[in-house]
Length: 532
Image 1 (tube, helix red, strand yellow):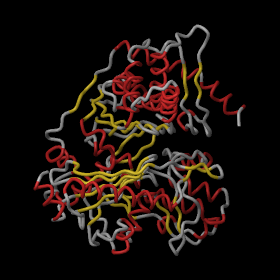
Image 2 (cartoon, helix red, strand yellow; image 1 turned 45 degrees about the vertical axis):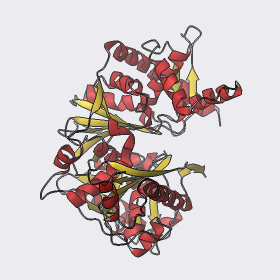
Image 3 (spheres, helix red, strand yellow; image 1 turned 90 degrees about the vertical axis):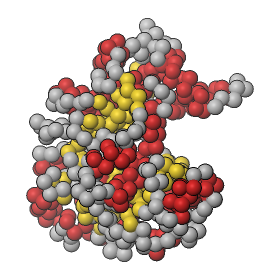
Image 4 (tube, one colour; image 1 turned 180 degrees about the horizontal axis):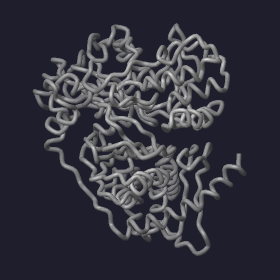
């Protein structure tokens, strides 16, 4: 046990990051060298209630408290001390979605997550109004769709925010968002690093006939950039986070961010010509642009880094859920045969088997559409596996195709950036569960994008570590030190990663698979329309 670490904990020199992801809430405590020293996590799942993907408020707080408590218990177990204070805290969560509150701070309708594809009309109308892509997941699309639907709660809105913004508000009293998270709420002006005022005015004019008692700027959170102070933990907030009452109030918080921004920080990919791919329940590629795109593409979100630089985001709603279900089936089969297999070993074995498959997956086809997929214009999804009578149907190709399919929808978006917009990329950094088995997901992603893919040793730490780094930057940065400089010099200077370059045979095979994937979308459409 390091005495330095123990002293850092006792003297409040550590930094805490907590991220609420789609399937896991994770708390990571980092030491003075920015390396993780303790962690705790809580598994949770969204529910599909009244045609809405949601999480209830009780589960949000229960999960947050449980992940914090497990991290605090980890500290006690490892270092024999109790956490009373930390140097700074940061919260992040899955981006987008809709949380609207009345003047008493009560949630008006159940939380609508990024996973919902229920705002098509609003998305289309706002995209046309602004000549700027407004994806269905964005908070402004949810708000406008609720107005179009004439939902009763609209007139009662006093404040609208995201999940990360909600947590931050309840713990600090501050209604703020980091600019990266805010860029999934409403378009950002890259010069002011704030909401685009012209577009706000256009929105207010658009809804003026409704005679609502608020204007858009009245109900949105304030925008902050990385490094700014976003308030302190109140006494009520401290009790809400740490139910044992040990944690003291007064701790500084950094601006709350989205999981896209924290993924960029955790992979040190916030510089231009870099990008990262997060592959888990959903998959998204973030590419930091040198200049704006030539035209509006409905498949591409334009968001920002936590510092306010322009990022193109190719986001697919579905990635590993169906793949995980198939691995679960193999696990069930093993147990039925009386073989007790370690889950990690099972994943590793099946993933490595995929490397032995035909370059294009042997003519097999799958769609892991557990939910709708906006990239291919599906409001609902049906997971499908399809083969023809002459496909080369074996385990290697079966696994290979499911891994290919996990990246399929996202690749359609990346093809627009790389092939149409001629965006230049030096490398992509991968993070998330799909990259745990060395070389497999990484190699297939390199084939999909035809770009070298690197995975760092720290990739498994994910967004909770990313938001902890943003809190650390706020507290420890030198005068005028940029986030990019801080990450390069202080955090990643000695971090090693493994890089895989695209194999020409796999690149060709993936392109062949994508031809099949695109043509086969009619099968997916028929499945949605003919099965309820």
